[in-house]
Image 1: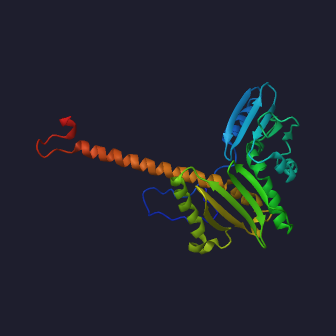
Image 2: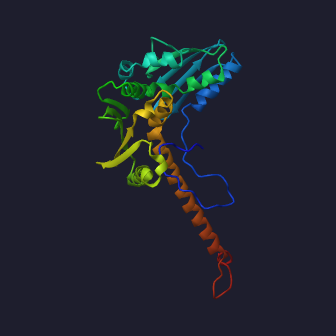
Image 3: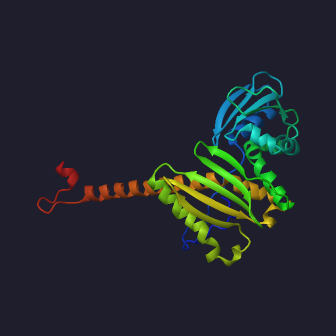
Length: 299
């Protein structure tokens, strides 16, 4: 596990026999299924592949290599309109980070973009980059905004749809870059868990003086089971040496919240079931006052 640099306050547990530290998990940007298939294709060029899979942010993949050559076709479906991404320099950005990927003019049906990839002599690093295609495509608007902000150039507010009822907005304030997330939760329980987690983000800088340069954070409730979270990015976060890490975390923030929300619900449900099981064991071992027999014997 990797500790987040968002500034989420980590409360250290009391010392126990387990020495493993408690920390939040940052979700890997690479699609594990796609990466494994690409590495398999590199090792065995004759491998035939036809695999569809999902990813975070409502992304779908289709990796196909129907013959025994080293060529493969990669199609990906994303929520934001392709026209919006293209207008923000997506093609030029992809050519810069993964020049080995070639955009195909005829896109596969039901997908947003289709690429050709030659796995001949491909390294593990290159395969990992290709498996991070979701990150590079959806991160394009963040790259555009961060570079403009760092260069003191203005731009219009960018609205990125990530779900049918959820958006990410990137805008400029006087001295900062503002990233605004509209997140909708399934029910009141998830909304309550989300508010607790978001409150931790908000309080982090108040409790930890070492987080002075961490991004600013605020949130508020919206109508329905919705929350609007706002991250304030400083110019230092958009410096060339830090921009990639900044974009990784901005892009994965929504998934980060939902992932830990689901994990928290699962953990509590597991604890509840374990407590019920322990209580039943105690009842089964209990003896009645009148007969001295256990409950199981009376059955």
